[in-house]
Image (cartoon, rainbow, N blue to C red; front, side):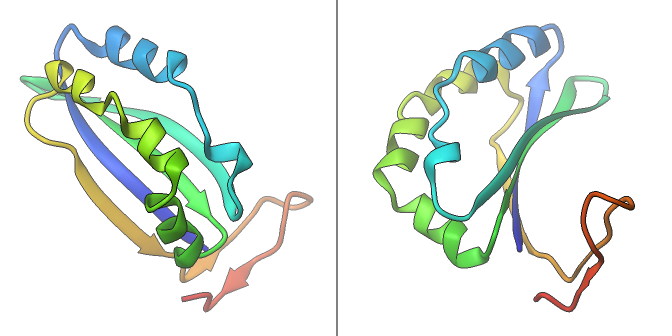
Length: 115
């Protein structure tokens, strides 16, 4: 499993617009092989921004890499420049190979050593 995260520092007072942009965005993720889930996370508020993160889970790093060179990726990011007006600095990407997962009883199983 692979988790891809982009961290966004959203200017104070622009949080609702940023969330609306994501809500209205056409997503191509559900039709891609290996896509598991997406979350837009709202984090702490600091002096000049509120931290957000987009969080996608993929069956493997290879599935994520395939997404990044797909026509769907290009379409999804075609208007990414519009979010620049909401942000304090550039987005920051972080990618993680899952080393272990633990799920609540009845929802899955513990998975160790996937990396």
